Amino acid sequence: MRTYNEKVSIYHGMASTIALNFSNNFFPIFAITILGASNYQVGLISSLPPLMALLMTIPAAILLNRAHAQKKLVAMSVLIARLMFILIIMLVYIPSTTFQAWSFLAVIALMSVPNTVANIGWQTLIGGLVSNSRRGAFFSDRNRLLTIVGLISTLLIGILMKDISESVLAYQLLFAIAFCFGLVEVFFLMKHEEEPAKIEGPLTKKKLMDWSIFQHSGYVWFLVGALFFNFAWQMAWGIFNIYHVRIVGATIFWISMFSVGNMLMQILTFPLWKKWAERKSNVLVLVWAAIGMATTPFLTVLSTNLYYLTLVQTMSGFFLSGVVLLLFNLLLEQSPEKSRTYCITTYNVLLAFVAFIAPQVGIFLLNVLGVETAMYINSGLRLLSAALFFVVFVRYAHDSKASIKQ
Image 1 (cartoon, rainbow, N blue to C red):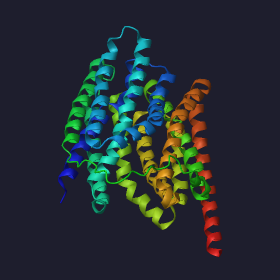
Image 2: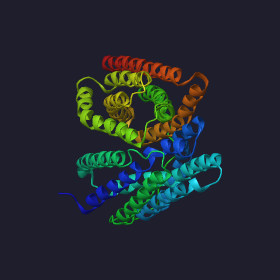
Image 3: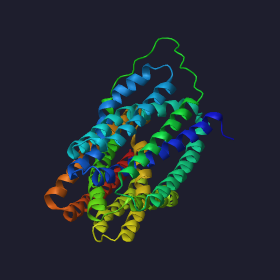
């Protein structure tokens, strides 16, 4: 039996999923088709949010720590972020096409500021509202329901907007619906029942950073492998967007089908990766997942057939589900328990930096060498990341044997 807060949180999550599915998924095709964005500008769509998250993480944490109640601050942040959709709707009325694209990027960057506060605040809020004993079952249930809602909403967009990918009104309608569900999102956030934090006794000030985490070789090896893999993985995001829209001519319908196939495969195969990781080890199974991810860029540029590309995107969901699960498992596994918070924060900060740089490198290679060569290089780098994870696996095995002998 779900508690009141658990039910409200699921409703909030559903509204949030729909709002984001009606907006973020279609930012690249909107920028290319309607605003005439350049390849460099398309790359910035992927790069700017992590850059802003990197800059805002510490200020957001300070702001949230000073707030006695998280709910209002999170709801206000979400409202400000969703109001940005109205600005995006109005962008097409700017006379200069060049200025339209740059204004769109400015809005994306501004939107990332309240989004960062909202994301960190929501994690803190929900952590205090759901008991430890219920947390695992609740999040499993919530994620399953939100994925189903995401699938249905994405599929619905694809069907209803199948033949109007070049219509300005179609995108304005998408972003208007996203804004409306954003208001529903704020409504359900405010419906949570939160008890204001009680301050008892003197506050103990925690240190900002624990540098001793870098003395743990297992964590350092994880950082090296995970950050290089994420660089290789995210480097191709902008290239995929440009290839699908500018070269293949994918419409809103096909972009939706790519997402639906990918999400459906992730749902179906997630338990398999969990089982394999338990039988072998997280890092060894991650080697195979990374090899699978390396095939996606190479296979993508072999054809411009949309049915074939849908199959490739669906297949990539199989390996993506493994990567997402195994990277998270490895992070927890290799983070010393006493300094786990510092380990996770450090990883996320470094990851945000990589997420900013990687798409720009990808777009640079695209402009200099062309889309096919850029994709082949990306497949090679992803394959190299799999080899690096194998080195990490051998290193872990060696360290494990050494500790047993001692």
